[in-house]
Length: 330
Image 1: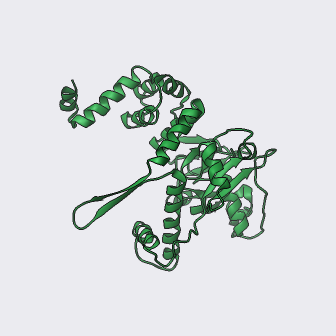
Image 2: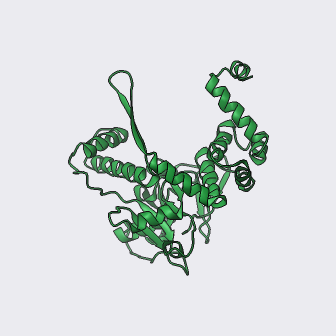
Image 3: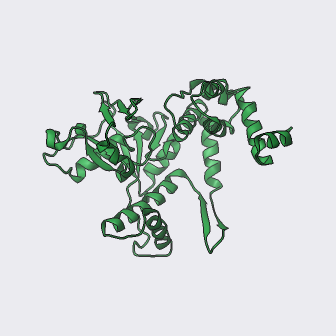
């Protein structure tokens, strides 16, 4: 049977096995994923993201996750994030066991390629991986500001080499990585999922480990129980102060464009109402955009609107709208 699938789909035996496993899943315990696939809301690749995220769980748990998924205006990354978040909520004990097993299985691997190039893989806990990437990204941005002509990808790679081999940064972490956790969860009174900016939701156990680690280099952001908002830090000038920039980064967490998960602390800040038109430099009038999506603000046909509750609506040049509710605090 698998050989027939491989021939029919013009794929390898391994590819046929993946297709067969996906077909079994969507026709047995992932019915809403199948419905979304049949209705054209998602493609096979996106359906496989749901299957891959839930394959580690029992069929009963996977079916419960499937029943809670929403598929409208989702890209592969956001759909898998949602599936992972639901999996943590539906089956928190098993999720935590798998997380600890993954941490225990951390490893580094090298694969040698052609033309004197090799690929280095590291299977790490998400917070460590995010911190390393953020540090390399900060290195690249600093070099770019100094006029370095290397590409950003080249600079990140060169920064990783310098950091590992004792280069100019001396191995000292200077990047900002934010971990969001509500106060009751931090104190152990609740077990709500926390969030690692740029990565997604993490288990409360992992968040507490980060928060109370005396050697932690991550910024823990604890939400105020009554309002869930950090303290406002205004400034009447075009450029935001460091405190205001940090406030906006903490508030929004990631790039403003729905579906983009680049951490806000490595994004540009943009005035919602232009400064030249009377827009203020305050928490309400700022939004973070990654460097790629920042340019869309000045492109014809692109419109960005924020409701009073923080709901974001993006209108594209063809008139389509995409809406995303604010992440808020945990």
